[in-house]
Image: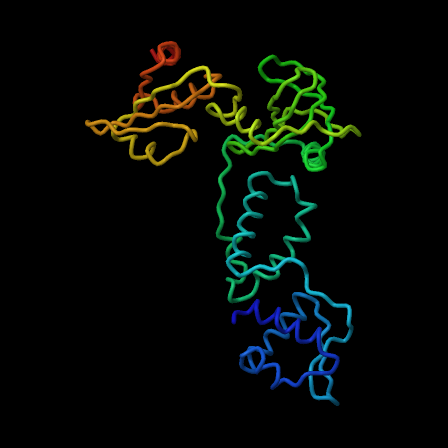
Length: 319
């Protein structure tokens, strides 16, 4: 019987008995030593605010009030460590977004993890998360969007698109919040465009939840639209890229998943070939360019030509 099981069992014993229970009886029922029972009693008082008292006259322990229940969240040590890591990841990746909502839970987790057998809170000090090209959305807008997504309400937003450098007003039905490459996006049905669109949260200038219910789309339809092609750009695939990587770079690329429907194969000379679907080529081209001479676009011809053109333009800057 582990520590959490003993705590839960002790609660059941004390909650069901009307009279104080002797220490020896508790030790027998919990299958533990006197020292272990002392620790469990202290933990229940300190971490769960359990109203345990010792009745000297009766020579036993009991709850000082009847209406006590253990908190609803129960975690094993490994689950607590995982939850702490997840909380730290969110805090480091997007500081401030959910600080108010997470603060009470974080305090409870920190208190539990502060125990010696869980590392004295060492995990939080040993996590290092590096942010790369993250764009911070406005905290209030994030919470408004997240709330409307959860409550299935429509949103009125003002959106500043980077590509056209223009602000538009939209009414959208939020479908999903997406965290992609250190940034947040909203997948939503745009009622002006009568179709699915993705909005970068850091480009939403204002957001207001409306009284109207959001239009709900089925999961299969959303997956078919947003996961059919490469990267953040959604929609039906318009091309199939074939990329060939050098033998040196292949040792990394072969272990990476770029798309659920990618097709990989090793070549006889040690090079590695990957084929995957794409719609809008912009993000794919940027990812290809970062590998420089260690990748070659085999097909299609227009993608190969565009990558070659950009490489020539880049090289001219260094002539």
